[in-house]
Image 1 (cartoon, rainbow, N blue to C red):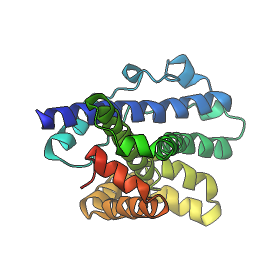
Image 2 (cartoon, one colour):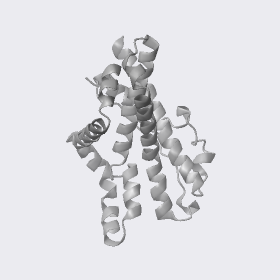
Image 3 (cartoon, one colour):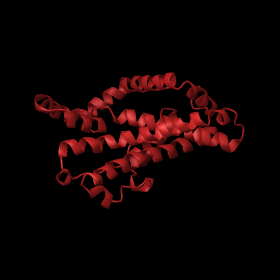
Image 4 (cartoon, rainbow, N blue to C red):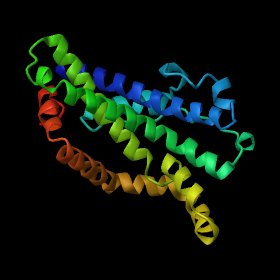
Length: 223
């Protein structure tokens, strides 16, 4: 029963984190002059608008079942670059919007956890403990999703950011490796390079906010 509860909570949190991520892309694209995603109904936190059968449902559930860190992906937000005022600059901001939105959610949760740390650590109510656990998963998964998407390998958002920064020969070289982005990404995942990146981020976070460790222990998210 506990495992089923954990899977349901993590799955719900992933849906929310992905919805935040994709709606941020869509909202930013609209602000820079391309209404395509807005007209498709993507500027919303309703997960139904963003669901991809494999990336949003099957893959996260499989990860949760095997006890792995849960993340996933949604339908890509469609952007028409011809509607943008400055394709390179605006494309870079649109790419960055998703991870930034996830990081802002994480910072908001950290602020609330630290602001209410005493009641959280003293909590015994099952309802309050449930809210603490959900908040802890929200924190972890939003950070995980942001860091993963900032990897500068196509088709992740980091590639759009890097592409907007590169010029000349560096950009030409980067364009040549784009068709192999998926295979490079699979290699990064297979060799656990991303796991090391995520662990380094969380280690730094816990050093800056040591009280978070006790709160996450209370939630049962780390142990």
